[in-house]
Image (cartoon, rainbow, N blue to C red):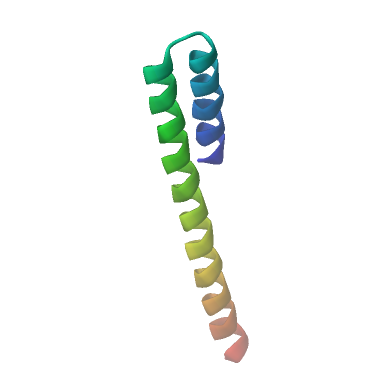
Length: 59
């Protein structure tokens, strides 16, 4: 997901440089959403991994 965020960010910056500000801004907005979704997924999986690790270690 971070790869897609980076692709959208680069595409948005290129569109912005070429004068397509509306499309560039939309692409950058999508990149921000994808970035925060990736971070949220990482934190969720990190918490689940810690909880599962403690459950396995506690047995």
